[in-house]
Length: 326
Ligand SMILES: [Zn+2]
Image 1 (cartoon, rainbow, N blue to C red):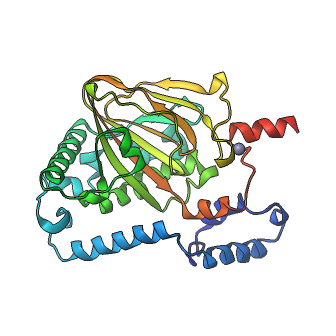
Image 2 (cartoon, protein in one colour):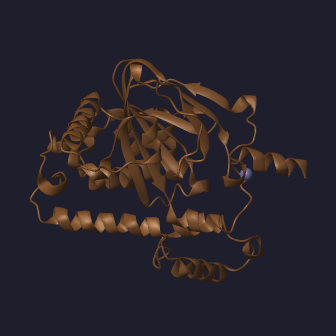
Image 3 (tube, rainbow, N blue to C red):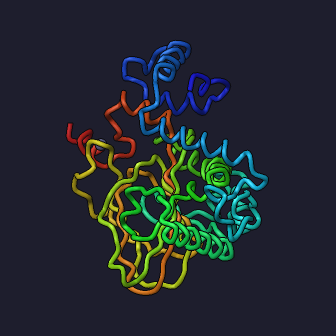
């Protein structure tokens, strides 16, 4: 943590937005030393430690293999080894790649469109990649069930009886690349107010829904600063996303306004990028088969700074309300 600020003006900028009021007008070096003190004294909470442990364990285990994509315990071979190494032209739609490689302000606007206040949608994944990923997840899931392997669960996976945390399949490395090279450039532009410019970890998973599962979620917020959600197909009815306003920790349950309610259909290959604190739910999938990949992207810098800041009127609908009333 201690060098998170070294030579990275963008981290300073993000942290600066979340300094205590008393420091707003302080000289830069005073702010800098305050930030360093916060970062230095922070010790990761037990859960983060556990994640680091798991990651180190995996890296150690994987480094002894030729292919870094062997499934846990080297028992099950991947169906599609090409999923485990970043290959932009094989993974992403050409329009998406052009946008990422172009000038952010100009080219993002061509491809990415707002579908709700501060939710951006864009065609992202190639159909062939979506199909391979779904097949890979199904293969892993079946293997885990038939051999009674314990696989990781997240709360979100409870919404579907069939889901896999992708790091469990050995995809941590390729997804780290995906976040750093392809999500961060977008979230830096659209979500800098919640640490979109300093994303440094993620939890990613794929959920599978069958029309007769009686699935769907109540509205909730994610344990993320920025969430990437990509529909992987295939043919289905239902499954629409419903958004109803961004709220900070203190105002998660406050009333929504009419203009905050937005329903958006899920389209195979299309990504939605939104605030983790943007309340949302997913309608049940009524028929067919639907799969989605979710990436909860996190910023340890923003999480630390959040402890010192209570007013989020620059994005929380309720903080904004209260500010106006005062
Ligand atoms: Zn608030």
